[in-house]
Image (cartoon, rainbow, N blue to C red):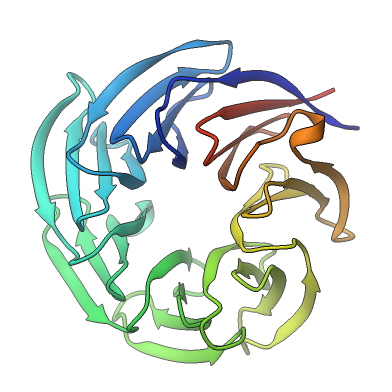
Length: 298
């Protein structure tokens, strides 16, 4: 079983920083060229312009219930786009520096915003009013994951610390130095009901117990910083991308690499910044070479 390149989407004039799924066949890309573009995996030759922002775009989030798109910019602003007509309906100033992550908690109608100024904000998904705001670091916040069953929110910070919050009160219940001081945690995602998986600047993957927050496993996974981790929908595989220009696909049961994709075998020329699983057989990666690669399981 291998993933092979089906198509390389071209059109962005700068690095691609975020990918999100819009529907079963459609996804959006966000880039330093200030554009958000829509692509169809079955007809990937031509993208459609969705929005043009005023600055580099680091993160995007689709609120399906409202059919609205949130665009996080380098200046700390969030543009809100009505996708029924692709028109901007609101502009929020949330952070003093770049908005690196926007994630919706659908069950609680909340939106989490992480900034380059070390500030985490929680907005109401209904009207975007501010529910919570706290500066927890002097460095960038890059990654967030919330666990509904345990009512916990996990945040990765630039100094290498993991912060854990009660999701209702946003009271901090735990913090721990996961990696060496100054080696940021860039990615957090769910692994099992008991464990989350984290990756960052030190190129290691760490599996962290959700209840006592102990590191139950740690392995060197890349040569440089890990930027994104994604679990396949069936949870049999996970993928990682890195500044070392590679995309790796792992067996989620054994934590062994089953495929390493680099430039010599159709991979990216520069840093790979983000990834997206469309389904169990379709994986998308994007990076600083301005390309978006669609990979399909053979």
